[in-house]
Image 1 (cartoon, rainbow, N blue to C red):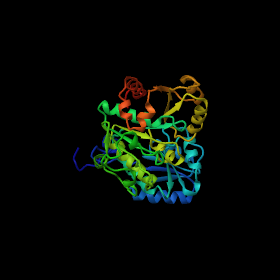
Image 2: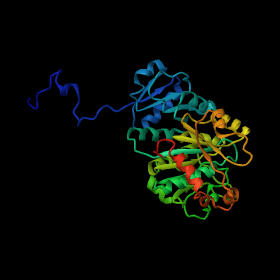
Image 3: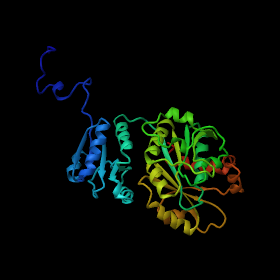
Image 4: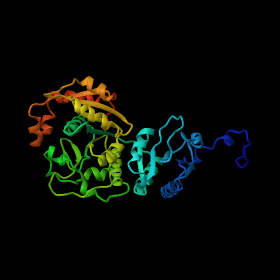
Amino acid sequence: MNRHQQPGPGSPSAREPGPWIPGETPETLLVTGVDVLRNEVERIVAAAGGQLRTVQDVSDAAPFWDAALAVLVGSDIRELPLRRRTPAVLVGLRDDGDGLWELAAAIGAERVAVLPDAAAWLAEYLSRSRAPEAGGLVLGVTGGCGGAGATTAAVWIAQAAAGLGARVLLIDGDPWGGGLELALAAEDAHGLRWPDLAGVSGSIDPAQLDDALPTAGGFSFLSWPGSREGAAGVDATTVAGVLDAARRGCELVVLDIGRGAATLRSFAWECDRIVVVVPARLRAAVATARLLQELPPVETALVVRAGPGAALDAPLIAESVGLPLHGILPEIKGLAAATERGRLLEAGRQRSVRRFIGGLLDLDGGDI
């Protein structure tokens, strides 16, 4: 065919664009009937350089759902269509209050964006969605009750994974926990702490973040200061930016979530998987069952902490809270004293601990 001849309607080149012709840019799909919410999202998508399709209800959304770059579901939507993919982000307004997180858990949303506060984060999220990068796993660890041993488990997981050669970042998610750096005996280690990142917005370079953080036990860590002085807080946008950089720069991010409502919202909803640590006691099991109602709908496993005075066995605890049992945190003689003296990493080298962590890291088939 002459190169200037136009292809006929039945020719292959008329049916499909050549590989040198860019395909149609996927759209972001927004499902909402709230005008204020639609206007906010339109502004954010435009700032991110994307295209937006807005529909008012799920019946109109179904044909576009799986082909969308990202699906945003408004807080006015309560029922979703049968689909192969969960909505990426539940978007709502500040006035929606605490009900946003309950709704997100009910419909299976991966993230929550409260507008206009999370506008910068949402724009960044949509920009990354157009050019996704391979990233590591964010593994959250929390206690089913106070003093369950979640920090101990988080430290030992990070230590063991780093010992296997993985690039690991351990993050302290609890500003009221006294400072994870104390458990590592690393309060004098040079590097940034959370207050140093207050006010940071936009994309964070993973390599620069890693270079700026202190290290202990073969892994990097980001802690709240282990001091009596009050520290400046960080907002959800900063947390999301830090965790995005951590995910892109590390093979494993271990997140010591804490149990407060604010930390659960800021940190738990950024996790790919969560491990809940609980002592083998009745009240602890009841507290854990309540906590599960606040966690995002991601894969969640249970670790039972052994110890004197245990009233229930591990399988019974797991059955009562409705989580799969993936390990028993061993009882280590003098662990409390070791933690107070900053010798948690030393205790983590014991054979029983290595055996426990080895089984836990293999709970998903070995990709942690």
